[in-house]
Length: 339
Image 1 (cartoon, rainbow, N blue to C red):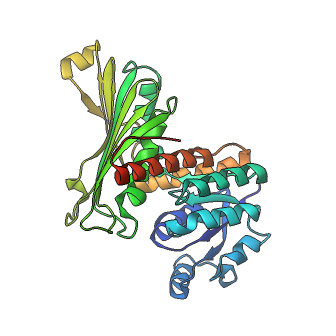
Image 2 (image 1 turned 60 degrees about the horizontal axis):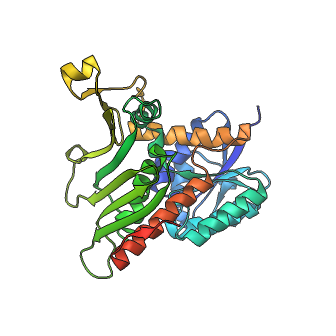
């Protein structure tokens, strides 16, 4: 089977830690080019991963112009995502773009239209969907094990936030995508958001979003920067879903799921009980790294099979619309309908 020849644009931490190593071990992908405007960074990546000097470029346009490249991974700062994704689509490349899809709804809508016209795959990097605890929790939800859902909450205390982006753009978008994925038969209709920043003009460190979905489902997202904390074990991170016949709590980055079902003998005896899904832990990979590997495999497979990637460009657009509504709500201090 023909391998997908991939170029990586942006050689920062996420490319070094996840995307480049995952492309190198993916049997149906071939890493043929990397690009970064920082020559020193480019040299470091070239040496670390033994990449041919002929495949290293300071100007990403050389990757887009290459007939040897079928697809690109865009791992640059957020403000470049929309522009570079549109350029890659116009060059006929399939695109995996790190979250979020773009900075604005208008840019995201242009990407959706361009991808459809060009007939290329565009996938957005929301890797939490691939964590096994969420996979089994959603399966329980969809098969009616907790009855009809009426409330969902995603809560995360993060030790890392990019100060130039703030917690909403840098981290909150992951949580928005995740709650929408859990309730994918419903649509987010209205949001209200509150945030806290140290000073006027600085980016927010904490944010709370209240959401109203169709089908009478309520949602809540809380994202908090635990500045000064040094251990992830001190942070609470989870998804909680309440239903008419039970509830599910899934660890945000795995591996455990806590489950309660009204009328179940086990639940009656033990109450909410915690368990670990089979194959939740891979021997040689931390949980989040395994999720990154699964999402890259999904992208490559979507190209080979000519199928939709699990997180396609239209789902990326939904997150942008909710993000825009949340930002408007923070500014105007009111509920905002999602367009």
